[in-house]
Length: 130
Image (cartoon, rainbow, N blue to C red; front, side):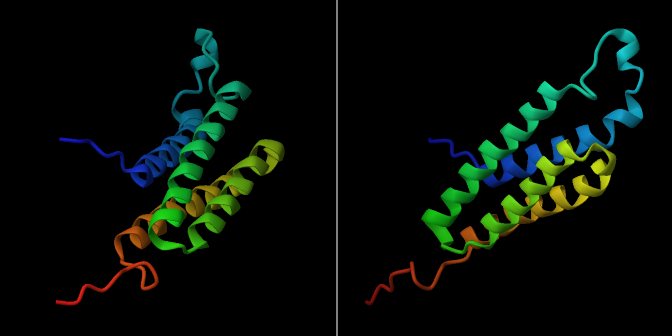
C-alpha cells in the first residue's frame, strides 16, 4: 500500500505551528531567556519557520493548481499572506497586526486549494460515454 502525503494538511499544520509560535510562545514561555534558551526572538528560527512555510505552501499550492483545479486564487491568497509574514519580520512594531492577516490568508489558501482539488474541474474532466 502506498502512502500519499496531503500537502495542504501539512501546510495548514505548519501555518498553525508558526502562528502558535508567534502568538502564544512569548506569552507562556517568556522565562526561556533566563534558562539560556532564546527561540522567541531568534532570527534564525523565525526565518527557518518562514522558509518552511514558503517551501511546503508553494509546493502544495502549485501542485493543486497544476494537477487539479487551475484556479489561481489559492496562490494569490498564499503569496499575499506570505507578504504579510515577511512584513511582520521587517515592521516589528506591527508584528501582531501583520501576523493575523498572514495566518488567515495562508490557511485560507490551503483550505481553498484542498476544496478545489476535491471538486472536479469542468475543463479537466473527461466524460465517459457508455
